[in-house]
Every structure is written in C-alpha cells, then in structure tokens.
Length: 76
Image (cartoon, rainbow, N blue to C red):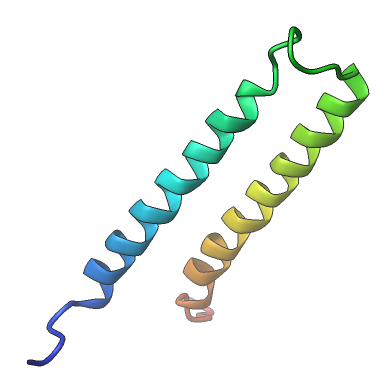
C-alpha cells in the first residue's frame, strides 16, 4: 500500500505533534515555579526564558527564510 500523504498533510501531522510536545514541556517547566519545592533566582529565570526566546526566534527565521527563497528577483 503506497503512502498517499501529501507534503502538507505530513507537515500538519508532524508540526501538530511537535508543537503539542513543546507546549507540554513548557507547562512542565512552569511547574518548577513552585517555591515550596524549588529555589531559584530572577537571574535563573531570565537565563531560561532568554534561551527559549532565542531558540523560538531562530526556528521562526527558518520558516521565514523558506518563504523568501521562493521569491524571484525582478527589476520590474
């Protein structure tokens, strides 16, 4: 039986699964905010979220660059 899944269908399947996994991990990270169980500084929190923000921006740029590559140069 051949695989009739289109590239877009494959993207949706993989992107949804990965997005849900990431969101789940972010929620788990949020559980670390319980100060009865954990001790942390504002600097710790800044490092964590600065790193996450940097990685999100990097991932987004990859998608935007893909869009730009499809454009063709024209003088008019």
